[in-house]
Amino acid sequence: MRILVATDAWHPQVNGVVRTLTKLADAGRSLGVEFEFLTPQSFRTFAMPSYRDVRLAMPRPTRIAKLIAEAQPDSIHIATEGPIGLMVRRYCRQRKLPFTTSFHTRFPEYVRARVPVPGSLIWRALRRFHAPSRAVMAATPALASELTERGFDNVVLWPRGVDTHLFHPRAIDLCLPAPVFLSVGRVAVEKNLEAFLDLDMPGTKVIVGDGPARTSLEEAYPDAIFLGAKHGEELADIYAAADVFVFPSKTDTFGLVLLEALASGLPVAAFPVKGPRDVIGDAPVGALDHDLRTACFAALDVSRQDCVEFASNYTWEASARAFVDSIVAVDAVLPGRSGAEQPRFVA
Image 1 (cartoon, rainbow, N blue to C red):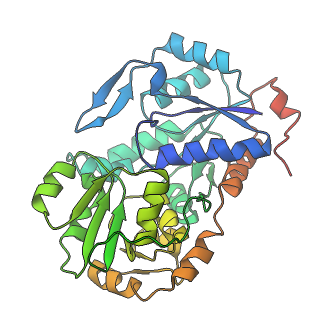
Image 2 (image 1 turned 30 degrees about the horizontal axis):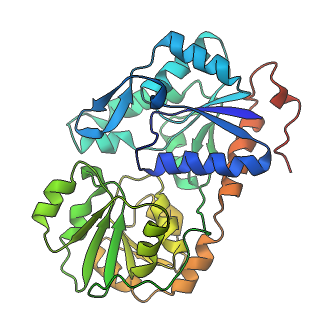
């Protein structure tokens, strides 16, 4: 089976959407599923206003149609609500082709952090975008429930995973004053990093990631260490060397970095909001508190082995199977394609 995923978020961007789609494709191979991606790399792009590191595509209908025809997909999935997502949605609607979508980003909160736009208008636009989808995939039961309550139809669960071969405990010393409080992710206003950096705590605060707010935060918080974007083994080493993972964001729909931290044996400190609450719940692998400082100190007493065992329940193979099973369950295989006759991914 071949699935074409249309996404406005792609390399060299470093974010949860890109990591999720990359891992989905890797895990899909073991299920007999091939993923093709329709990304900004196939089009001219321009810098996103207020976030110049992100390039938005300028897709043309004829180019979109050509790329889809060349891919010969058995199914089409639209991962983002940007220019590429909109154009592929239009392509499918005009030809009465089934497609699925996924909900990754809380755009109302992201936009309100930058400009005073009513959230109700953005939610209305998102509902309209996803309305024709055979299945709107959400990362957690709480997010799926929220989308349903907001008027989204056909919402299904698509859980995430973590690469435990890469992220696991190891003996690493960063040679920094302990305890080391670590935060990993995009350095942007919606991540609420000031809530972490403002805390009066012993030890060292370390920020891994890049983004439009990095320069201003480095100037405002000279005692914190900003390491920039890190990947692979280097990132895994940093996770394993820290004492607490601090997740101050209140806007994330999931937070893959939470699972990466837990798989590394790193307990989590966060606000009790959707995202960390959905991932951790009542499990003894972190501390959720409206007082983030209290959560940070409480997390220091959490068993690192409990964190590792908790994260082992999340695999990318299970995530990929749930993704593909949802496509089959809602009959989103394109008419006449072989995938409708031979679903090799079913165990």
